[in-house]
Length: 425
Image (cartoon, rainbow, N blue to C red; front, side):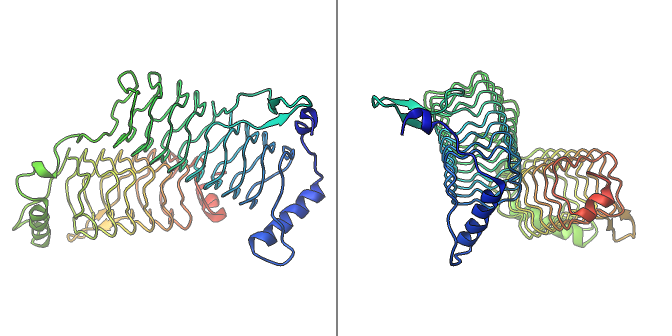
């Protein structure tokens, strides 16, 4: 095939595309007559791919330029050399997808699940009559993700070595174990991103923003963070006193605190871990910690499953990435607490009635729940002044009897009835 022919995209009618999707659905369901979608070098730029299932499809060199593919399933799809410029893939799934050599310039990948995706450099080429191999795409670089928005995306174990990510947004993304060796990262934004165990070897980080990022066990062979913005970044070093700096063991202090709560303060001692970095602690799951004081504390990544934190004082604490399934925060003061990417399914933030009969509303003013899973959580009567729920999963959450006029719900997952209740688009 001549390069002129190879570089020509294949047009397809709406009817033919619908039939391909139908047969691919049968293929995915292992039904007789099903056929894997073979869309290599096809021009799909005029189609609506919202919520389409094209997992395992062959889409080598496909054009999805400007396509709306929100919520699409593209797991294990072959998108080698694909044109994804300005494609909206918000909330899509691209687990283990082959994106080598794809152009993602201007694409929106907010909240996208890209676990194990391959975004390394690659070249889609054709052969001329004389045998010379030439690139099929001449209007964009070999691999370009500059200007793409990966905010809040899950890029765990993804491969970005050699990628061109100039000016790319990775803020609040989960990038554990990412391979980003020799990547072009000029002006990239990793603020708040979780880069635990990532490999940034041979990268120029002088203009990279890593403010508030998690940089635990990051490999930096022939790379340096000296000129990068790493204000408030989390490294292997503690961000304050740790559990080892407490006067007695944390286990003993928790026992004293329980006694203090059970006797209404007559015996025991209230637990105060304000300013402490509690990373690595394994004593908070299922714990009874009502009325604990933990202002400015670090709970990053801890297991708080089914713990009781009623009326706790947690202002300004870092609770990013916590496992907080069914945790009880009723009546707690959580003003400005950071809970991005936290698992808070069925958590309780509704009001709490003390033993004296006093009703206490949960204080969530300026709290940050971006990208958190809050499905089934309860917020009845909580204070939500300026609370940020951007891109959070709020399906089945109870938001009745709350003032959400100043809360932020950009990109949040909400049911039709919830949107009507909150009067949001």
